[in-house]
Image 1 (cartoon, rainbow over the protein chains, first blue to last red):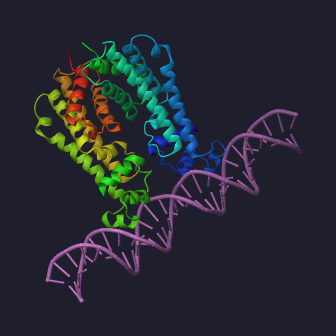
Image 2: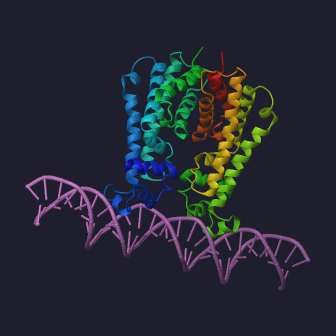
Image 3: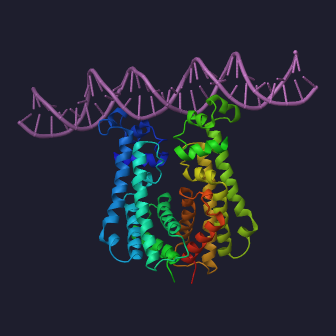
Length: 181
Length: 181
DNA sequence: TTGCAAACTGAACGAATGGTCGGTTAGTAA
DNA sequence: TTACTAACCGACCATTCGTTCAGTTTGCAA
């Protein structure tokens, strides 16, 4: 049910989706939906939490907390690509949230916390001499994760490209660009 | 008027914005808006056309049509960053369109044409030996312009970073990553 | 067969939506 | 002053929105 709902949200946008749209996609009446969830916003919250929980789980794994910053950064980047592939619909929805409701604002705040985590890694990477110092760390991390986040606009796992292959290419391209040489 | 409307669209999302919201932001009544434009969708169309016209203008400039593909690619990349900075609100709106209405679907079709133009440049760049052949051209162009498009999520010209500086950094990072060495 | 809970329906609710319309105001040229 | 027009207002319209609720169906354990 969450699966179908999020698929429709991503197709038409959350605000552009009516409960009638959801009911049609689910093959039931509007009222049936309320037997399972508290309402439209509840579906959104479940989806956003799932995406955010998965992303934060990456930042708590050993690979993200020990070792040189550049390695931790690459670990988080690869982990994010993995999460993005595993939870594609939920991450897609997360990246499109505008902050209209309380649920959305809370999700945006958690997203910002994740961005701060990444920004800190880049900063440390510069300090440890592994990242080009001529590029602003904030800018670098934004470009890096802007690229990652843009994946939701076109990446479809079912087309054959695995998350690992994608992460390899992305890491190769992006890190060659920002690493000191 | 278009300026204010698009600002509100970008803040709350197009579907999440009511005519009442627009009226409040403009300091007039709903009905006054209809004296100037045909309706909500008309405002959207004006904005999307403006962004798309500016992007296609870049592809028709000499820098985008003559010379080695790698140079043309860099020219289009820099031009896109310039357009993005000059027409930030309109480009932002364009990149968030979901295709719910006819206006939106038409805009998406033009966007795809732009993407095909870029994809072709990358393909030629590989053929001319200036772009790493070990990376799929389609993938490379998607990563490249995924990065460019992600700029709308955080770039604000008024914070001091000029479009040229941004384009320099972006070109440096991105092209070091994809260029043959 | 009965009993019961989960799943679901259809009709309706008040609120909000995009849009219309007859009339009023403000500015300006003759 | 008059005449005209662009700009605007307030009330209203039909429709759609998310949600509620009393009642019905379905599936299954006893």
